[in-house]
Length: 169
Image 1 (cartoon, rainbow, N blue to C red):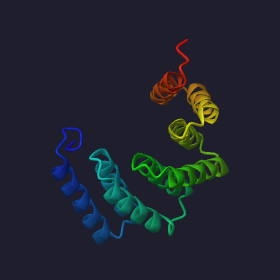
Image 2: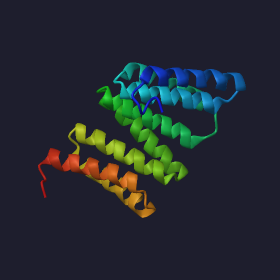
Image 3: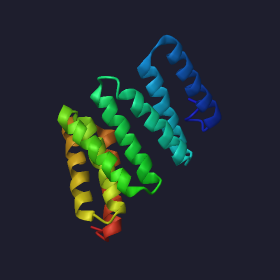
């Protein structure tokens, strides 16, 4: 709730408390989730270096857990953070790896999310045809599954692509 209200210091305090409680309970996933939430919050506050640090820490802890979906999700988050910080080369590696992991485990929501995020990166690097392919793949998945919020996000990404390419149809 604090994050929604824009009270980032209170939200950070809650996530840090969640880390401590998770540590006390021996709850690895709780600890990892607190790190992911810290990274996401710091990304929203444009503190990309700290966001990446917390996301990398989450990934290190997650590597010891057998949940490949969460590992791929964290790698995708890392790619988004790298893109936002302007490290497009690292972002391409992370997002490509996340997409590959999601494909291997057959996690369609993850495939759609990673495809759309990769498409945004491809737009920024001028790879417009690849971006269109990535966004359309994500849109098809979200449409087939009836995931309207996902569809809306991808349609926004496609709209940005059309503006970038001058396709005003």
